[in-house]
Amino acid sequence: MADELDATIYYDDDADTGYLDDATVAVIGYGSQGHAHAQNLNDSGIDVVVGLREGSSSRDAAKSDGLSVATPPEAAAQADVVSILVPDTIQPTVYDQIENELDAGDTLQFAHGFNIHYNQIQPSDDVDVTLVAPKSPGHLVRRNYEADEGTPGLVAVYQDVTGDAKDQALAYAKAIGCTRAGTIETTFREETETDLFGEQAVLCGGVTSLVKQGYETLVEAGYSEEMAYFECMNELKLIVDLMYEGGLGEMWHSVSDTAEYGGLTRGDRVVDDHAREQMEAVLEEVQDGTFARQWITENQAGRPNYDQIKTAEENHEIEAIGEELRGLFSWADE
Ligand SMILES: NC(=O)C1=CN([C@@H]2O[C@H](COP(=O)(O)OP(=O)(O)OC[C@H]3O[C@@H](n4cnc5c(N)ncnc54)[C@H](O)[C@@H]3O)[C@@H](O)[C@H]2O)C=CC1
Ligand SMILES: CC(=O)[C@](C)(O)C(=O)O
Ligand SMILES: [Mg+2]
Ligand SMILES: [Mg+2]
Image (cartoon, rainbow, N blue to C red):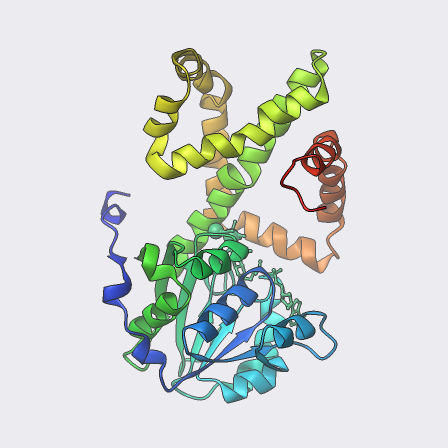
């Protein structure tokens, strides 16, 4: 989509946390994203209240991190911005609990557009609806912030009743460290579809399948599990670190000519036209709602397939050998 190539990217100088000076932000949920947003906002001087159920095991964690905790409806009642950071499948239920606590002109905010884009939450038309989505696992959002580094993010506005929706979302992005690294302006649709595609085909799904297939190929050919683990999983991080620092070029520069020639001539044989066709099919299922419907139905049914494939993944041989080997690393915790 050529018209989406020229992204607008915002940095610290483009954002003003003043848009949150008089605001209280309710962070609902204290998991991967929730704990990072809440602590980063708090360290940036923003008033934060964490919304968690009575009896939630995260309550103690949030309190010991120095944050005030209330139930989701209580937190939403106190807040001007309500950031929904519970799992996507739980969000519609949590929204029902807090809906009546949103005043006209308040902001309902997400870190992923799933429930808005696929119509699982229909927000009232008198609130701003925004998205601030770090392009990173939550624990690194916190770690980067503490290291005075940033995490790239996305910002989008679905509904702007106050006229300040985008400026306030950028203020939030700045306060959690996202404008330090660059925050791209997008739409709920684009964020939702690209995020789902990326995690399914490349980041989480594609890469784990590549690792497992490589590992199994070596082990089935008679090589040791230890060799296969180091070759196909451990070293992947070292190779990706080079791509992260300097692109494909820095990685190709750093590996041997032999690796470069072999990789450039064999890589496309492994991830071939068939893989590409499957990527396009996966994207289509995201775009036409097939994936969303399947995931919602799976949850309604109590996650029978999810539990099964999760268990199979946990029981893969590479996990046992990996745990054993990582335990022997000299820098590992005692
Ligand atoms: N995991 C990640 O790094 C990323 C997540 N996102 C998005 O951020 C949002 C939150 O995802 P995660 O941080 O992965 O969630 P998570 O699964 O880590 O967090 C769950 C938290 O929600 C709370 N919770 C769970 N069930 C609840 C209930 N019934 N009522 C109230 N609170 C409940 C608990 O505090 C729990 O710690 C999602 O929209 C996700 O797509 C976006 C970017 C990356
Ligand atoms: C970490 C992230 O950006 C993901 C993969 O999209 C997610 O956890 O949903
Ligand atoms: Mg993502
Ligand atoms: Mg995601």
